[in-house]
Image (cartoon, rainbow, N blue to C red):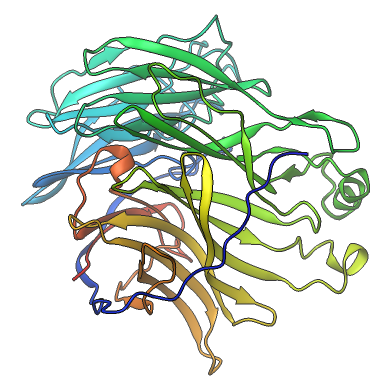
Length: 457
């Protein structure tokens, strides 16, 4: 069994909380796309970000489907910039093809960093090798040809178009941490220091699921990655074929598919100095294995004293299986927050909870955001129905207090609320700000990526 943290009860909200007055300063359609039908989409690299702010401009990466090409590698990356006159397309891949969206980062010296993964296969080959790269643009002239950076890797990993990659950028130093998966074996990592050298590399071998019916490695995907002052964190979710044979067989009867994936266990690893100290063994942070639940790692924010704030979502069970396997369990949805200091939990709390026995308002996608005064906020989506039975579909924001607890949530008055979204996070190199840049999708709309700028007062 894996080590589990002692979960501490949240303390009461601190006195003197400021009133939150979120204001929407802009909403626009950034781009529209054709579904590539390759298993990925513009939000697939959800553990990273595809939007960064480099004052006064904002940059965003996107996907463009190549109609003449077949999946899997049938899209190319695009790069957009927002200036005072609005958004414009400043660059796109004119030669390569890929499958997944491309994480974006920025350094305080004006380097715009795009993580790309071009395929090395001939056109219309279904699957095969790929070469992870980082493209370095200039914020002053992003239309100029970028510099291509080739990360150094331990050994000779066999990377493909399924990269499940994550990227973090330390804004001050401009250092980069890049992750890329090798099938079901490990997450490989490469670190580029402030001298411009890929000076450290390694692999995070997946933990062994010894408590499964048939023990197997627990592939960990959708990594949320953070890097600050050479300290690094990786937060990821189990992504393996259903390990419980009875559940797997029942799901096969329901869906007709021979597979169904498990997203029920969250793990993290960290190092206080990526250049000198190995990553810790994987530590299990949360587990919904008992009732076939679901989890999604959402964000990490690094506080002023080095504490790491983890944010994730939980669903208590798989409703398809409840009647047969756990009929007395309640179906709930929640947003969870834990604070980790030097590898140990000092706080865990539930921030929002809905579902049976709770509320008709169901929390969805969420991100953390800090302002220049180190005040930490969570911006999130809510659907369902309110206490009066009225349909709800909106974004909200709340302030999280250092000792636990939070302010009352306030509605963000977006005309087109975003249910899944990226933000201009510090993990991507954006500065702390009262401005939250959001890039995401609105429920009920297909193949439209929207931008929103929200000010937290």
